[in-house]
Amino acid sequence: MKVLILNGSPHKDGCTATALAEVAKEIEAAGVQTETIWLGNQTQGGCMACGYCRQHDGRCAKKDIVNEILPKFEEADGLVVGTAVHYASASGTITGVLDRVFYASNFSKRLKVGAAVVSCRRGGASATFDQLNKYFTISQMPVASSQYWNSVHGWTPDDVRHDLEGMQTMRTLGRNVAFLVKAIALAKDEYGLPEVEESQVTSFMDEHLRD
Image (cartoon, rainbow, N blue to C red; front, side, top):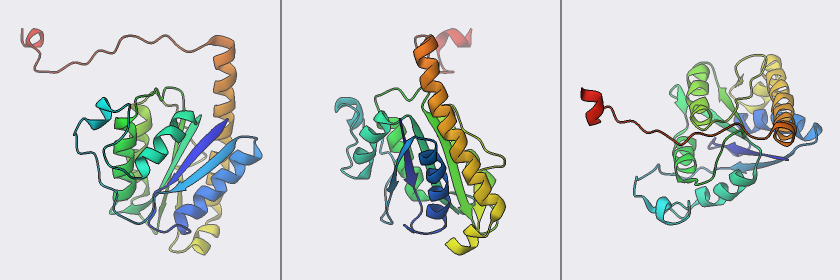
């Protein structure tokens, strides 16, 4: 069992990394492997809606880190994404990457565990947290929660380490992610996966809806 962790902060070893490391430590302690990928501090553009991924087995037209993440995400049992707060939103880097990862992927993300972690100096954490969780909930991914919203506060990594409640929230999150990953694996063996209906995509301009 494995959880993939994405660090979307422009600082490789900053506040977001400090929080994610605390989550990873607890996941590993529970017997679940982790791998952390830093998305870097170079511009990672968003989806161009070019359709390349539909013709090339779920690969993105942009030859960048997204194509490295996709097979790792497919193999993983869970995904934890972390970002610094930029203007009460996720970083442009992680937003662009996640848009393409979730759109380009041609594998099912159903019942992979998802969790979001946000880091801010003062405000904007809850809005960013809500934004990231939407990637999971549109993909049938159970969302792991903690004892509070998954955020830490501070200007430096040392500030974050002194955010005792925030760090405890990260540890609780890590344990909950590991538990859900293991519990879902057991449930799959015991009960199988839930029934899947054929997807219904409705446009509100469909002729039958005008009547």
